[in-house]
Image (tube, rainbow, N blue to C red; front, side):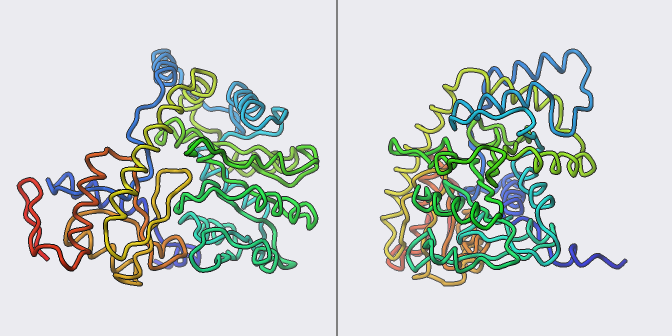
Length: 402
């Protein structure tokens, strides 16, 4: 059977592949430490679960409008007013099956074959392939050595006549970097001046540490929602620990949202009605779980950073948000794929190679799991990477050997 060029060009998601590998290892009884995960271990808000149960008991789980139910869209409107200080209409919002689909539909609405989408390095693993799926050309922009935010001049130099969008993620997956307001403001200005879209992936925007906050993209423009090319993308997955519910959204100009909704109507139809009911309850209910998650993650970040700094040769970037540490491991191996495979084989710790994010010589380690897993996982890493460590490591009933 002959496959399409897209099928031949697109690789599976590295992070999802690693999740599946970790699950298989645990099922087989292996003492795997999964430091590659991308979802909090906390539970979904009680209000979301209760709303879902109530709807299930009716037995009426039906189709929904392509852009989401009126209640879901109204909840997004209220969320945008509450957390961004921007009043928008229902016509400015579209719900989707996760923020990932919202990004994909936005790209399909904006990009023609050969068009370009510019984004900083390191980038979320799916960005390049999502651009390719839309027929476009990904244009990653590498920052200066030792940094995780490109200069404004570097971003501007990457723009061409074929550029259709700039795609940003702050706090950033994988680095945890919170992009500066100066940088965000400059990108808004560039996009408004050139008439290109600014796709702002804000999926982690409430998971910021040390009393900080992510820059509000709407504070960086004087234009109205329909006059500015800004599209804000968000969802319930990370902040409410509702990854499996698959509800995200887009907020932007009405004409673009209408085009995106039309595409989504043929691509997948409306988001799951059950998930939308649960998401509305999360958005409209008490926000205690988000505050607690942020506090828990900050403590786990501090624990992981402290432990990682005890590994000679490892350079640790202290993340300002998300739940990831992005470590420079080039002192051990500049090939991050080979290093990650070596770590899994020798000590059964799952990490994500930096090459998947456009920055080789790095590993992404997640601290969204338990403190016990963080401690055990980093203990194994230190034993493996430290040349002065003993030849054997005993972990529970398992003995690892170099």
